[in-house]
Image (cartoon, rainbow, N blue to C red; front, side, top):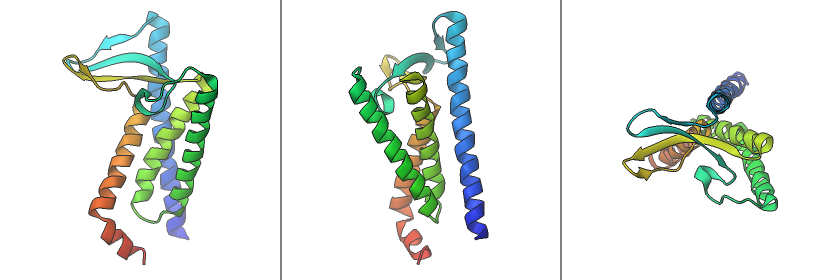
Length: 165
């Protein structure tokens, strides 16, 4: 029982910190726009801060202007987020932390979808004229969590299965 309580507290802390970090960065970028009326900041030769409003899913994919499709995608994201929360509660190994990263990022972006009707993305990585999709801090944690889950499944799957018996 004590281990379960510690897990819940630690996962809640991870989720809260990531959510607040995501909110802070988005609010900071949005405040820069209010001050300057636009934002296009060249940070380094490979990193810009450039705001776009994403009405699609991850990295601007499936970007729709129709409210019915937007609402459907938002509903699906909410259901997936709830499923991830259930997985966090049921998982007993290291994967719980990676699921927490994914959940925190998902609720950060879901909050924006509900509050702004779009997700502010602003991190623009590029090499010369090749630009990756513009993303935000929540997307970083979602991607990191997914990559770690994949690695755990590939590398540690046999160990985790034996540990949970």
